[in-house]
Amino acid sequence: MMDISFKAMAITNEMDLNKIALQCGIPKKFTWEEPLILKGSILQAIIGKKVDESKSVLVFSFGSVVFINHTPDEMKAIFKYLHSFEPEIDMKNIDRYTDDYSLHINETESIELTDEYVVVPEYELFYPELISTVLAKSVALEKTEEQLGVIHDRLETMIDRLERGKLRIGNKELARTTAKILRHDYNTLAYIMILDKPDITWTSSNASEFYDKMMDFFELNDRHLILKSKTEILYNIIEGFSTISHSIRGLFVEWIVVILIVIEIVITILQIAGWLP
Image 1 (tube, helix red, strand yellow):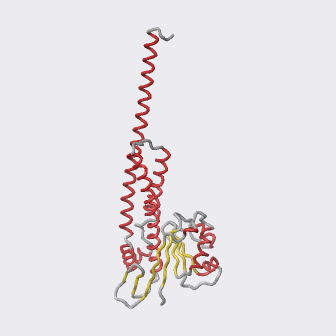
Image 2: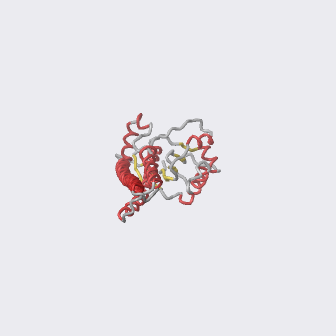
Image 3: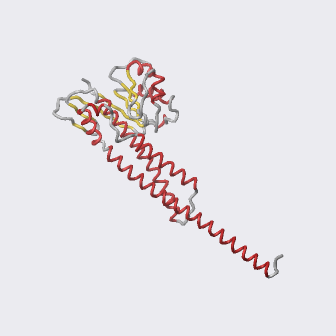
């Protein structure tokens, strides 16, 4: 059997698989944890030419796409098709978050994992889907990690302002930053579902063992924990900003009340003294 090549790309935050499946004539309701697999006549109709049976595309709800044995021209045709469903896909930077991998079948005693390929002693039907799932989650995490860096830069700017004595932080600014953190939290911890395992791993011990090895090699669990920890730190920082902002507003209101009381007392004294009617 020939080697199998994989190319995983994170192209957006979310994709509606059911909408794509309906257009492709696939009579199935997709849930978050399973990918939409395009192959055979469906893939041929999308690309516009006959395709080999070894080629397929796995589309994940969290915005990743994995191409198996595809040429660049074929991938462009598929991107164009997906863009018709998800217009927010940035076609100019489509390959910003990507990873290439391959599966080799060789007579070895055990599975050998490297940064560029995995070698297995014999082919199993679950290999393409499990490899694709790990790669899809890995590039999606890469995308989220970069987005987290942007949020960190934004918070650093706000901290610099505090150090310069500019204590006022607008509600809209706090709300926008908090929303970005929440979106990051949702995309990473909820939507990518790092801790969820494909259905095949619950029925096949070999599939479960292989998937766990791939997860460990790509350090998905460790990366997930690091992102979760960083997210909690961001929440703490935002809470600090919010406390400072509310304290400043409370102090401002208190000073206004004090000033109004002083003005009322002065007016009363002037009236008693006969200086005011």
